[in-house]
Structure formats: C-alpha cells, structure tokens
Length: 416
Ligand code: AIR
Image 1 (cartoon, protein in one colour):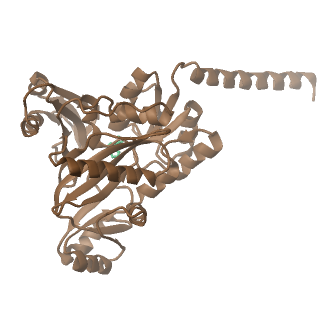
Image 2 (tube, protein in one colour):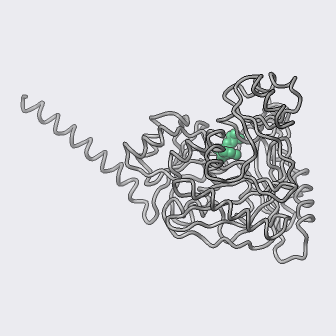
Image 3 (tube, helix red, strand yellow):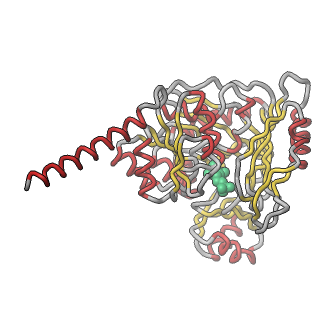
C-alpha cells in the first residue's frame, strides 16, 4: 500500500475511534445515574421517565410514533417499530439496562440485546415470552398450583362452542397482542361464536366467565433481593377497559392479605426484576383467582403516584437498576379514574374544559400528551386523595367520576 493510502486509512481509523469514544462519552457522562432504555414510549414510559428523573436516572425510549407521550420527558426518543432490529441496536448503544412498557416488544430482539450488546433486560425476555401468550401464561400458573379460571385453547368455531357448552359464558381472548380492552370478547350465544372468533383474528383461548364479587389487583415488585407488594386495589371495568381503581380495595383484610400472598407466589414463578401488575378475581364464594399478569407497571397502579410512599414507576426503576426498593405504605385512601376519549371516530386531540378538574382540591391530573383521540383511548387519568379528610372511598369515587365528566379531548376543529 502506498504511503498516501496508508495515511488515509489511519486517518479514517482514527476518525472512527474518536467517534466511538465520543459516543461512549455521551452516555457515560450522564453521571450519577445509569441510563434506562425503554421499549415503548406511551403513558407508562412517560410516567417511568417522570419517576426516573429525581433518581438521577436518564431514560431513552423506543416508540414508532414520533413525539410519543414519553418523548418530552425523556432524554431521547428512537423512532422505530417494536420489532425493528436497528432500533433495538440503537437503544442498546445508549442504555445500561433495557426494560419494556408494552407486551408488543419483540422478545427475540430483547434476547438479542442481552446476547449481542451485553445489556441486561428486566424483566427477563423469557418472562415476557411466557406472559405475552395468555394461554401459556395460564398454563404455567396452573402448573404452579396457582388458582386460575378454567380455560381452553380454541382455534375453531366448534371448539369455542364446546367451551360454551362446558362453561355457559366465556371470555374469548386473543392469545397475544391485546391490551386496553382490545382482544377480549365476552361470548354467551353459540351462534355468535364465528363472529367472535373472526374479531379476534388469530390464535385464541376461552375462559369460563367468572361471577366475581369484585376485581382486585396487586402491584408486586421483584427487586434484586426482595419482593414487595403495594396495597391492594379494587378495579372497576366497563367493556373490558379499566375505568377506576379504589385503594384500599373495599373488601376485608383477610382477602387483601391472601391477594398479596398470591402475588408473591406468582412472582416466584417469574424471572427478572421489575414491577408486575397482577389482576385477580374475588369470587362470590371468597376464592381468589388470577386473571392476568402484566410484566410492567399497570394502569391499576397509577394511584400510587399520589397515594403511596413510593410509586409503582419509581419502584420499577429502582428494581431494574438493582437499587433497594421503596417503602410501599399507603398515604391515604385514593381513587384513580381513567380519562378515556369519548369520540366515535379518530380525531385530533385537544384538552378542553379542564377548569372543573383544576378547581377540585386533592385532585391530581395526568395528561398523556396523545395527539390523536381514538374511541376509548386512554388519554389521561386523575387521582383523588383523601389527604387527611374524613371522606369515604365511595365519595372519592363519585367526585372522580364528576371530574371525568367535565373533561373532553375532542378537538371541535378537527379536520379528520
Ligand atoms: N400500555 C401498554 N400495555 C397496556 C397499556 N395500556 C400503555 C403503554 C403503551 C401505551 O399504552 O404505555 O405505550 C399505548 O397506548 P395507545 O393509546 O397508543 O395504544
């Protein structure tokens, strides 16, 4: 090689070397905290980033929607799909630890992050793989001796009709990909079996329809060397979507203690650190059955931002980084109320009529910053706290509902 070519090569190598150092410096200079990469930048990513900041932890999110809800409160957003290798590679180059806030995160790519980039993913990708398939999730809980509603794999109309004959009514569920009410269809009439299966459009399972007294949930945290649970919440759903969470749940102490014990039993079956949302049915006969597990902070734990000493979001950051977990006590009775878009068709979103809400004392608003209002999309939530007042949980719930009625997200000038 001629001297001139050698010089060019050396210069090029040097430029690449300096670039790598600079790239590395860019990450490690963010002392004191580590950098957490989050797959998903919706409201959960946004509240994770909000909780990470005071701990000195930087957050970088990966989400397909440019300027996603978490973007304004994160250090950086990587715009990419949840199954796009390039985006996962980029996220890994910035992150010391990777986590996810949506089950659609590709598990093979999360494994690739660990194996190729040597960046730990919490919870473990294998845990997500197990949980994201609702049938496998139920099978593993059943195998561990944890009580669940009876269920069947159903791939054909005949199999669904057979399940209906056995159980009377069922909840038909998409095995993967469903969330926020999508992918869950209640079925009672065998004549509806075909339409119901078509609406799922993929592998499905049917679960016996449970006559429950109430729905409960436990936010459980798997830390580096300890497990903790937040106080038990009571969830009110409508059309398969969570509307309100009341804490403490309006049920007796023994049920609450049993619910927490079950949550610990569930965690013992799962690998990796982090927050898990465990939804339960309290049946009319006082039994507790596990409905579903989410390997991430959960909507039914949003109340903890104002109502607990340490929020589920801060707990998740502490857990995945490997720091001591936070105190879990309840500060006061609390009600969380989701603000869903009431629009009939997708339109641009504009937050309106917030005065009633802002004038309500002890009411904390949370806007998710979504540009588009879609039917029943989660646009925000409010939390009402008792804060030392002599007010019942029922009254708090009624106030939260009044506040919700006043707010709107529909942009009257939307050209959609
Ligand atoms: N999410 C994830 N699983 C269940 C829920 N609700 C949150 C995550 C995700 C966001 O919902 O924060 O990024 C997506 O919401 P949307 O309205 O864009 O579908």
